[in-house]
Length: 293
Ligand code: SF4
Image (cartoon, rainbow, N blue to C red):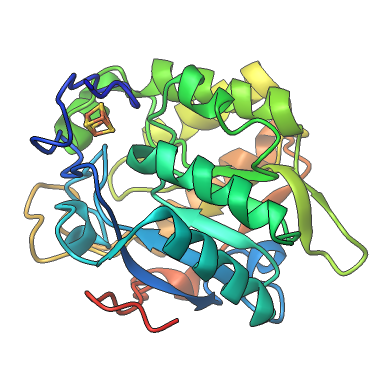
């Protein structure tokens, strides 16, 4: 069966060979644990039940989780193991199940979610994605996913080509996000500020690229309006593997301030911001070939 799960449209038979994402037909998970480094509405007080999948269909050259992008790290999970770990995270008190870089694993995740829900999984399901998705793949999650956290990384195709080998990134991502919003609307929280459902768009401000942040924010306002919830992230951290300028240096506080000032000037009503102390802080948890849950 040829794979067209994402816009790379590799058309490889993943039982025989891996595609661009590095994923064969098996699912690998490199961490499943309560996680406290998401937005407060996702991490809450008890943590987000986060499942980090191995492999990635975007492979940004500055990725802080670079070790995961080859698709070879992590423990092999079949569908029952995936279902089991979702239920265990719920038992451990997670506010939600947070599927990180789920894109290449659509079939297994959809099957596991159906089984887990039948067995009592009732906390919200979070789909945490780089947004380089097809609308068809996002449609497969209708009724299964409660919360979408799509990154909207770039608007300028020169940047998306240079940094993620995807010149069509923006035009593809914006349509996938529109489908997410059609399904679940904008993010809503409960009386304790914990997310119940809806979309929040993330954007990581990149060093030397505030011009593109402005374009991304303009595009969100133009397509979805000022009430669309946004997380404007400052946590970019240069990695030794990436020597491409300007991604070889940290984001400066001044750059983040400029991005934030522009966001405020556009009138967005629901913006999560990160403290400037997040600049340069590592948000990478430990990954391994063994999931201890
Ligand atoms: S999920 Fe992987 S194999 Fe399938 S089209 Fe995307 S990059 Fe290619």
